[in-house]
Image (tube, rainbow, N blue to C red):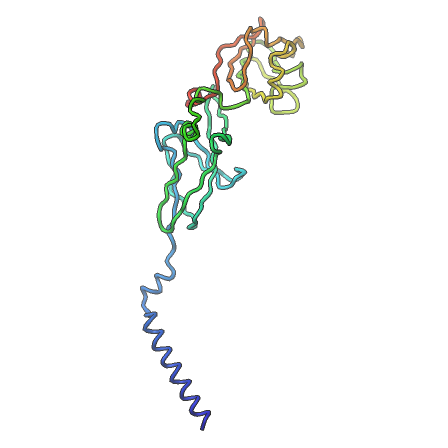
Length: 260
């Protein structure tokens, strides 16, 4: 008799609970669709905050910049990109400096606040992430007075070979070639090559044994015969002829000279 009574109570309890929950979670098609609704969280990167955004920018998702970047030209923005909602979205960027027909990647140094940022990305919204310009970062850190100073410590040479033979652009007679390789590569007649000098190579640039080496005569033409002392962070356009080296132009690699 006692088991029968417990059984009846259990049945009543189940019926009661089922009734309560069915009222609380009303089973309709609308509620089911709501449970499975996909989020529409998106971000867009903008390189158009103001007139100071004059450089194209590469945007990365990781700090070592090893992923495939988003490229944003000056005054432009990306198409919306779908992302997972997240409180803190970290991104990293590298500027593209254009000077003398070449592109130089440039990451902001620590004194300018580094080339990184963080944004809050709320759910189901489009979040605009504005990339700061180099000048704006300078201003934020009270360094706008450096606007005319070179941005880099490396030096670049654009060399035109105006002779009838191949040449090598060398430091200390082949010991330190002006080239990103272990051996200096020949530059053919009529060709223009661009070379980057790192600080170690630059230390020898005004030395008498530094210069152009002709393959035909194996003669090194000293760079200092130009009568100019070379400076770090500059872009030089040189022409090598049978009579020697001529500096066609030189300018610092700063904001004003890298907008083209």
